[in-house]
Image 1: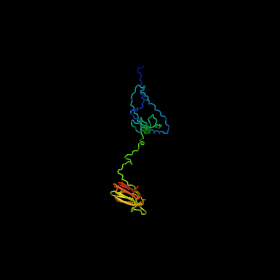
Image 2 (image 1 turned 180 degrees about the vertical axis):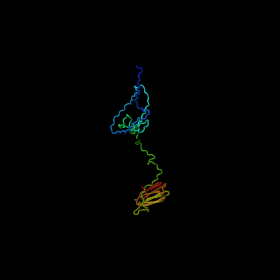
Image 3 (image 1 turned 90 degrees about the vertical axis):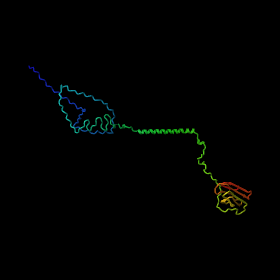
Image 4 (image 1 turned 180 degrees about the horizontal axis):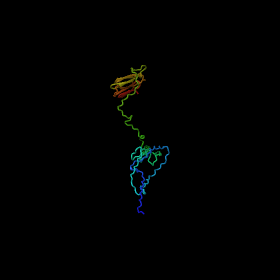
Length: 310
């Protein structure tokens, strides 16, 4: 019986570890399958479709941590071998590191025109106004201003309506009680700026100038009339002759005298005024005889005078 030791069993090589997926945070470019194609456009939602009731998104919960990697317990030892590099995948267009391929939205941002994940699209609730300044603010301010102005106008009108009758009862009616007082500026109370000129007495309308008739053309003439005008200067004289015609003598030199005879039925009158319209003494006298008791009428004036029997 041989005492040689039994042959040693050849060691079994350890099994290769199971490869793990690459860490995306290690900066390696993402793998793109060879049959990848850009996604099609998002379908356009129907704006007339009835909206679904909105529900708040479920709260975020962190994912369960993955179990750490442990070596295979079947092997006792492991001899590192040269690792075969991964073949680069075929890529039609190289994509820059750290950016998603063309056609995908950037990380953390929704596509343009769509809300963030977990929120309903805005067209589902057309009744809500868009965010920003609320509409209708200017109309509300205008309504408030109009209401304030109307209240002030009504308050002022009410004060006048209430205070008017009270003031009328308390204050005396001075217009009805006081007489009208003509002041110096009234139309009828203006003092004359120039002294009024004396007016001559009204005289009968003179007829055409003609030669006076000193006696009646027929019948007796028992009545004698003597006209006299006295003064210093020249005067315009008018008198009735024997036929009751008015005779004018302009610019007669004073003293002036005229005698006529009548039948007692003709008019008797004489008047005179200064030719230069100056004011100075001017006298006239009428004497009637032959018809009873003699009658004499005498008048004095400063600008004009007139005499006739009573």
